[in-house]
Length: 262
Ligand SMILES: Cc1cc2nc3c(=O)[nH]c(=O)nc-3n(C[C@H](O)[C@H](O)[C@H](O)COP(=O)(O)O)c2cc1C
Ligand code: SF4
Image (tube, rainbow, N blue to C red):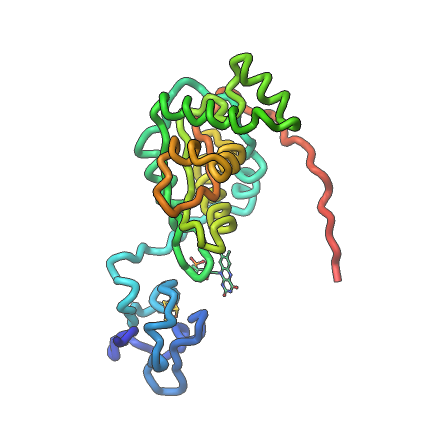
């Protein structure tokens, strides 16, 4: 199967497509048109870089349909705005009694699915839990999972006193999962969820990482079942989402960066 098609009228033979291909599947030199190496289609990771970098729109790739490309955004936030967003982010654990709209959740997942993945494998799938009964069941099961743990005795006591120590009363839980055997599940899901988190903050939403749910889902099949995890999949991470009840006025201190400069 041929991988790339070059529009001979548009191509300026600048070689950019060849240069950016992470697997060096395209060669271009001098006045020659770009061409793919033998077996390229079997190695291509569908990253779309060869098409996306071409200033003339001269190249198409049979594995990355032209209709699926978006124009690259031009108006990026300034460094100062980005720094503000990153510093303003807090783990939000107090939420208003207001659901997160379907529209907002769909946009967040749309952003999450565009996060980088190892070898562009795009193995992350999503589960959104919003039904109050299901959230309550996950909360209870996670507390049951913590019950025998001495280190979690305080959390269990607080939960037994009526505090939502796991899901924090958030109206939505977003779970990232991937095939159990996928070796990059931890990193890919952490990156995708970080994308979601920061986009959510920019939209005025509050987010907290659901580490307890992630661990409990791994340890207790009942938790995975309550989440609705498909067979053969593993929960690699999750976020609680909602409308934050409070605004933080300061950025709390963190340890100074430990850096070795060579
Ligand atoms: C966990 C992880 C490991 C990666 N490792 C490599 C790597 O070793 N070499 C490389 O060229 N790209 C690496 N990448 C980049 C991916 O190939 C890239 O994100 C993917 O092709 C999608 O392209 P994009 O980041 O431009 O969207 C890695 C990405 C992730 C998330
Ligand atoms: S889609 Fe990516 S890996 Fe495939 S040919 Fe283009 S640049 Fe290379």
